[in-house]
Length: 373
Image (cartoon, rainbow, N blue to C red):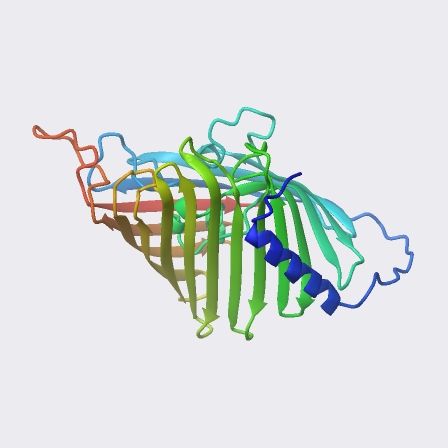
């Protein structure tokens, strides 16, 4: 395993991890030998489906600049997932098996036995300090406010930050240490972004600092640094910083701010992307809520979004209503408006144009349903 000597995240991560272990109880605590019964397996899962309508009626029946709610004017099986896991006492594991169009986006072109495996990792809790948790295998990224499973987000559709600023998953090792009851640190040493096999000789290093400032306010700082070479033109280091601030304003009102900055060295120079998203959740009662999301994503070279449009930026406003039926069925209705400073969206073809890449905006309506078990 090779990690480039200029990896700033690695150096900082080692300082953090060594400080955390020094802060914790020195040495390995003596563990009393007990014959505990093996933990039972926990099996859970869900099925997620949606219908989306784009009022511009794009000829390709796709919502541009989206990642998971792509299909337009058609019913779609977004994701079906089965999770099998055993709690680490002190050794455990987790397997997430995924099927659907969302998995096709997360793992495009993967034909190996891992093509339907979102996560597969072993976990061991070692008696070092206050307890060192080690995960080895394939796991979802530590970055971002949103996740792949829609029911665990506040909105149904995903933000531009989730779609373009950060990775989906990694393969490698993850070390997590609790510093205090309100603070933990994690170091990630992984092969690459969104792949099982590394595409070069170097590893990427990630860092997570999770701090609960108060009982109602939390701060998470994430970072990722390494040589990725994800495209033919990328020839150097890729670095991303991700920050999440959450605040419980009242029992019914929750707020989250997510901000990202990323850069990658390419043949054309340094590609930079950055953005911020603000989330407001208003709980009506224990079964229903309304969520708003406002976001701006700046992609000056069009590299992150793949548009190739110079000085490109895109914004969105999303409103979501959710209702939980019988605790096993989550229903959501969502209205979303995307708009950009340059034509990046499609509209219905007419006698003058084919409608591809002619619009600065798109308005979509979506109905989603997630059944869990």
